[in-house]
Length: 322
Image 1: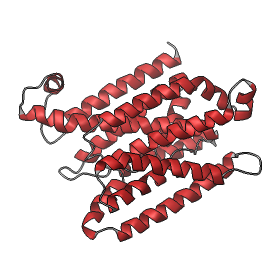
Image 2: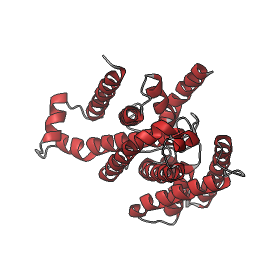
Image 3: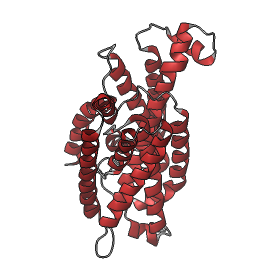
Image 4: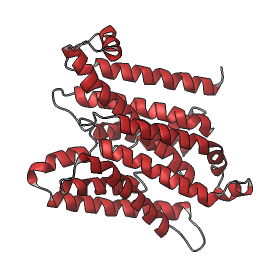
């Protein structure tokens, strides 16, 4: 059995298991047969409303956000040829989060959050790549250092916004900032963005396979490096904005998931990208299930759990590389 077939089977199996577990687990006990019956039909019962109006939308939102973060991380790592690159390290998510927090401070409606997040992410990535340009071209180390500094700047602005926020709204703003899916009950937009983003990334996959060895080498093989950079910038910004506007700052999914797929043998981006989406979505669904049930009826910020799980995994991956 080929490695690619194993990756596909394992990721699809984990996705089905995570989705099923998320729909099953909760304060109301619903059997697996009832869950899938309520998903496929509408009988107006209390269990049907719990599944259709609460658990299913939140589960799909968690899966889409996890997939979006994993996809954005994979693109960033190819772009910079550095395993530490992801939207959070480069400050892209910080720009998106700062824009959304400003919208919350100004009491803008939820319809403005995604455009604001996209604008903040795009602004951040433009700043990073404008300031990260050396005398002749972008260098990986310079871009990473610039991204870290820009991320620190966004963090300072977020702290300023929080200090200016109304005291009654601060708990909700802080909870959202740590990563929260409790209000993510409209998954269609982020699912659509994930689908479009994955199709676009798969269209770029042959060029990404060449860019892994460097943009100069890819240029010798017919790739337009500047156009590829711009495509990845825009796509990563859109994906990051979608994730941040829906769920706030959720770290480590985009950092560790592409590593795990590569370690398992999925280096071809035609395989790596969709498998990373499935794995990232599954991991966030399982983390969100824990977040809403481990201290029920209270909920934990899912971003805290992903960090607690992601730190030891990342240290293990770093140890393997060293």
